[in-house]
Amino acid sequence: MSCKHNYSQPLGFISKCDCKCPRRPENDRFKTLSFENCVPFSGESNTVANVIFDVEPNSLPVVLAGTIENFSNDGINVIFERSSGNVTRTILANSSLSFVYDDVTRVSVFGFGQVYTGSFKFHATYTFEIE
Figure 1 (cartoon, rainbow, N blue to C red):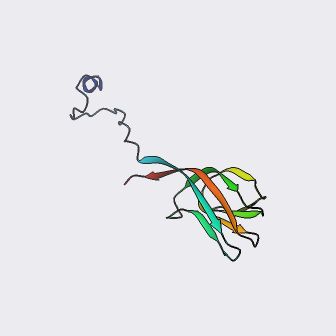
Figure 2: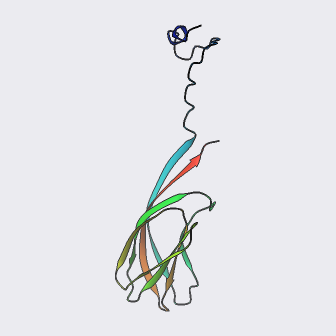
Figure 3: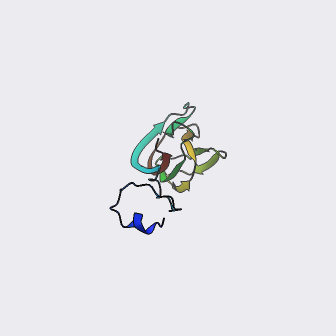
């Protein structure tokens, strides 16, 4: 039997076919979502870690692009926790840092022993499998 007969049927028509017709592709089982926000942050000299972004579950692959601005008169350290290892960046007083990292699980800010303030503007994109 030829597949030509099946291709002349309406879309979605099901019939027996003993030929080697190619299977129709499955619907995409993955979904990509994005989220963006701009938030202020601040901390005191005795702050152990100021977590400004966190991913739960940590297995969710997040691509994070953004800018962190330091409004204080002293530097701050920013730690990007990633599945492949942490990245630490210093932002000097009254400066900013723009970045793009993949597989981010957490972003934390530490001061240099003084009160600090700043802002965190970001765009997060993640893809997950639809069950």
